[in-house]
Amino acid sequence: MNLFVLKLNGVSLIMSLIRSFALVIISALFIVSLSVAMVGISTNELLYPGIYEKVFEKNNLYDIAQEKLLQQTGLPQGAITNDEIRSGINTLLSNVFSYLRSETTELNLKLSINQDSIRSYLASQMSNLPTCQAGLSPPDCKPPGMTTMQLVDYMLSQSSVNLADMSRIDLSQFVPQIKDQLDSMRQIVQLFQKLILALLLLSIILIALLVLLARNHGLAKWLGINLLVCGVVVMIIGSILSILMEKVINITENQISVIFKGIISAVSGTILLYGALLFIVGLLFLLYHFLSTRKKSKKTNKK
Image 1 (cartoon, rainbow, N blue to C red):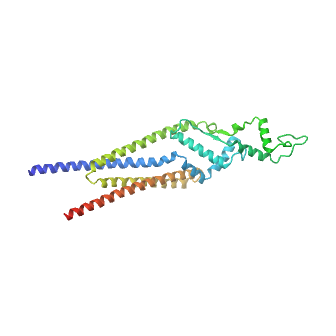
Image 2 (cartoon, rainbow, N blue to C red):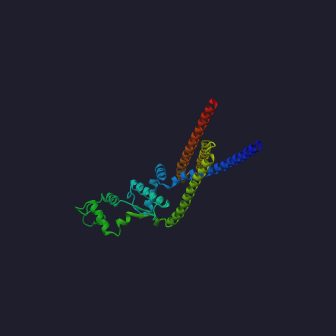
């Protein structure tokens, strides 16, 4: 009888060791997969225009874009307002990132300009023209009885300039290789999203195995430790990313590096937030384990 009991105890000990070893392996895989998945989800913010709009606004990039666009298109100064540039760029960003996220199948890089804005600008340039007299004719003067806007429409009708064409700018004409570059980026984004989805599915499978093996052996403790460690790992990654970016900016202080810093700072902030949430949830599980264990101990002592 004693020999039988010893054998049972030995088998129980071996099963306990195997279970503990399996829990450690599963926990390690879970920590790695969930940590990488959370960092990946945080960087998914880069695929939405909101983060870029904030950086553009903060660094006056809309004004710079307005100046560059006028230079590239040959449009006169003042033909495009800053509000139109802001609205146009935000629309372009939305179109580009929708394409990168595979939400649209066609890439739209066309920027529309209000025709009335162009006409109003041309009218302001002609407002001081003298009234036509002998020896003078438009565009050097304004015929009697004709308003400035009527003169603009008349001059446009007499010229080879097509106002409709002026109001539609296709940026792909100025950067022909941009379509191929965005197509390559789109493929990378698709692979990245599949990887993140695979890691999330792996994390779900691993946590299901964790629950199965530890449901009667301190499940709350195992979940708490895993989530807490995940939170710490994610926060460390976010902190390292922020520190590295600060060092890079200190070495190369220019407009591009400042913009890049703004984007990375936003992403690292999101990573730190997710890490903190995992850490807090892990602490709550450990607190629950501690309180439930203490409650069981008190009941045992009373008996």
